[in-house]
Image 1 (cartoon, rainbow, N blue to C red):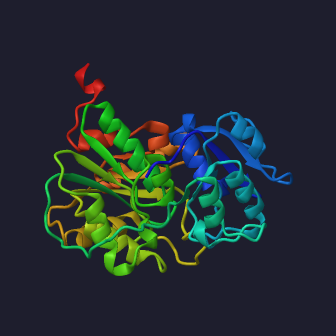
Image 2 (spheres, one colour):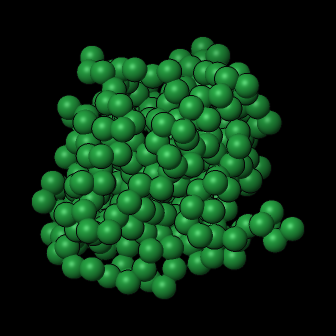
Length: 343
């Protein structure tokens, strides 16, 4: 998959920064890929450090793709976005979408399908949520390599952030490490991967096996959902079995006690560790949990350090907030020597 840069980030009618899931991922992990943003007149959200452009201005400044930088409940392409998407196609920009709705299936305000328009203009429509290649069912057969999988107490608990941060730290330490994207934001950052939540249930573990073939290095796999989630546990289990992880890192947001957009309470970290390890051992009997990634955004730094110390003592494993304090603790647990160790 070739995602042409630089990107124009489409903010559309986003009501809050929290809804800019795709745009935020670009700005945190590949900020040099973004050249500006485009929004509707009534949108009050902006992105610090980027200029606002019309689609025509962005094209003149060198933009190659329009990225749908926002999300909504249901993951569908809203009718209000279609004029901007059509204008971008006419301007010669590729369109990159992480929505469940396929761009190819949408009709533009001109009455023509986006697929027709894109074909006429010679541009590409990228549906990151959809994988068109063949997939097989999982085999459960052991393959060479080391695999680290992020799991969580809930959705949106920091699995992608932790996985990318850990991968980059491993690479900086001289290790042959690869980030394996399993969601649309991760695919946008990495430029490859399969969105597991859009794969047929029978093929989830097989898709993960396909993405994590035998290797001499370390594959750091982005997790999805939670084994305790009333809607998404099936995705989490298929990913867990297909990854055959050697190591797990549990991701949790401090202060969250209820699943996002659901009424179910969050499981405890202890229960999350126990269930994930037990089920991971269906396909890798030696799997173990080696750390807890704690999102402490709601805490002061002092309170964050205090909470981390409490959890380390309780669970007897390293705990860190990758955003605030890095992932050196995880590297040590994985047996990776860091620059600090060499001093």
